[in-house]
Image (cartoon, rainbow, N blue to C red; front, side):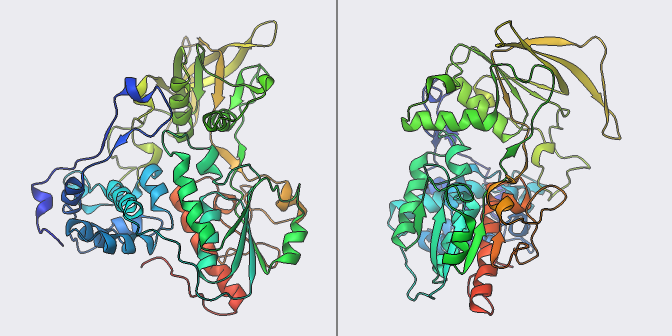
Length: 482
């Protein structure tokens, strides 16, 4: 490695954020990147350990020790080449990935782990600014055509890889803009949409065709895609949200989180919102039900819209502050380790072990409160209500952010009568093949609700399987580094 033993006397340093009072005035990203020399210092903390657990901890199996060493030694082009060998979109993961790689960093056993996510962010942004990222159309075309349905991270990754293999790829998106979850599920302050556009422009220049406002199975029959293409890849996501069927659910003011986040992004784009559909938090008391990333995004969005107050409640108990017997190294802690997001730091009351009992509405049907009670969890994962803890939150808007159940069972799933698994996801074999020949599935649609980094991995691996199917042999596409 570049500087042997550097990890012993160099502390972890991460980028700072703009002040809360400044950043909540708008929806722009607010990260203050480290300087080039500071990033190199952080890359030098990599230990060159015998078994780099960061590598298998990353769903993409990124070559982390290699690009850390490149950065440390000011070899940015080599770092970029190492990074994109396994990761199609480091500009996305460098912003929004929870960095399971850092949970597996061996240095994390004795000190704070290497800032892998920030090094990755720095590599790709420097690559774009210096002109290293440029269209590279395939030198030869295979004569095969592939339709990819869904333009989220899995669909984008599959399309990118299949195009690299020389196949003619058309990507269909039912919304008016490309990006899927990246576009309408993640607020601009975490991922500005010009970052998506920048990548899409490269992919278009490489020969991929993008078609928006195309709802396959509704506007366009899936049978048409099957006839016009040699393979179809479904990457439609896990879009059916978990509901909360308690009394008063029909109150005016109760919304699924994605309804709110999608509309907010459209507003940032400058789109007109029909008056009778407006969901806006200004001067309202907001309750976010669900403690995950989507709930956190509702918090940050509500604050930027000028909410009078924001409270976030979670059914599960408050996680431990650090690792426990249930979260041993190098396991990625996930939701079982306490953390505070940048949105929650901006002004949010948080409560755990809270069971929602009823949405309270006035005579006009408008939401005015939520009745809830504290609960006590038992070792068998059941819970009991704690007597005397009943309370009613003053609420004008309630956002349900409790995760997603499975993909939409209409559209292509219904039209093709695709088999589903016990969780309601599209069933495939190990080669991503569905129950219909020539039709493949990847991402959350197949795996279930997961991380963006997993969606990219799924898209890339599915592309390898499709390529093998089309050429009748071993795929030429790069696999994960092993």
